[in-house]
Amino acid sequence: MSKVGILMGSKSDFEVVKPAVSVLKKFGVETEVRVISAHRTPDEAHEFAATAKERGMEVLICAAGKAAHLGGVIAALTTLPVIGLPVKTDMMGGLDSLLSIVQMPSGIPVATVGVNGGENAGLLALQILGIKYPEIEAQLVQYKENMKAKINADDKALQELL
Ligand code: RP5
Image (tube, rainbow, N blue to C red):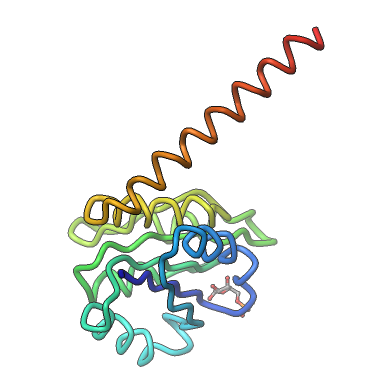
């Protein structure tokens, strides 16, 4: 089975990362979750990116805040798809993180989800894996069906109230 690498720039990012880990676990996907910083531990970042593919990883999620260069640095060093997860900040509400991650130069894409979008980061990783693994694709179809049923039930309940 495939493996998703989940990196965060600081342990303080973990709350934002948790929903990504949870949804991947729920779908039975193995994760390797690490604290690695583009700025504070650049050697580890390089080592991780250089060995991720040979260690069975197929998609990477990189969470970071402020001058959030982790996803970009990792994407520069691997051909694996990298999903950027911007972390909300006190000073700028995460706009700093978002722009640092999404505004990559041509040639080095980082597929960026919304600020604190941990669950969407996990789901996007699953959708990428679903191209290759039918068992993941089948679970995604069911996930969407459940979501549809919930929204339809909410709509029905609302109509009864009005
Ligand atoms: C970034 O700086 C991290 O991703 C984190 O979001 C932010 C603040 O880190 P700490 O000062 O909380 O360790 O590198």
